Image 1 (cartoon, helix red, strand yellow):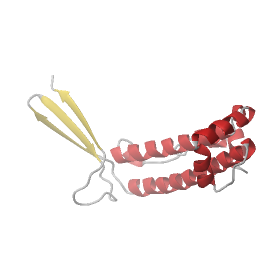
Image 2 (spheres, helix red, strand yellow):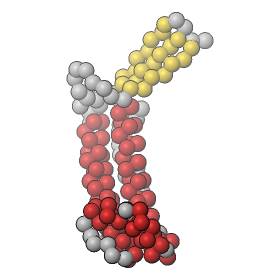
Image 3 (cartoon, rainbow, N blue to C red):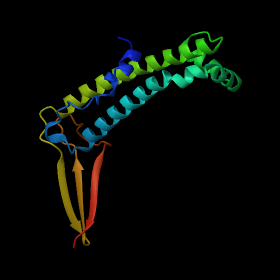
Image 4 (cartoon, one colour):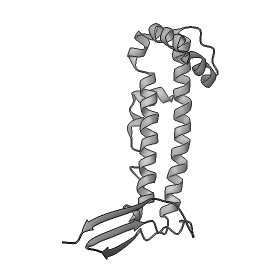
Length: 166
């Protein structure tokens, strides 16, 4: 089944993270960031594919071709798609080819990120929450405590909540 048939049958509309079990890591900043990135990658891929089969493009493909030719976009599209573009139909074919390649790349990235997420949450007891109070202000930090987290100094997602003690 082609990517375009997938769009027409709405099989690309599912959330790739809907069946992910993160255990006790649901509030972990690293897990939340990873899930957000997966969802964003999937949405951009879907929208790119969906836009490439929009019937309005086919209706005005010759106008789009002339505009792309005048702006220099055609040479970029030819370079990226490795296809010769001589008219509106070949431009449309190149655009769809690029969209499918981008979707394939996104699928690979999503699979790798889901695997990373599984490894990150495996055998994890959940994030650490630390609270301190100073000068009437309560600060709570939520930090990933995955066994897979790097030892030593790191730069990673940490959630900080600051509230005045009342």
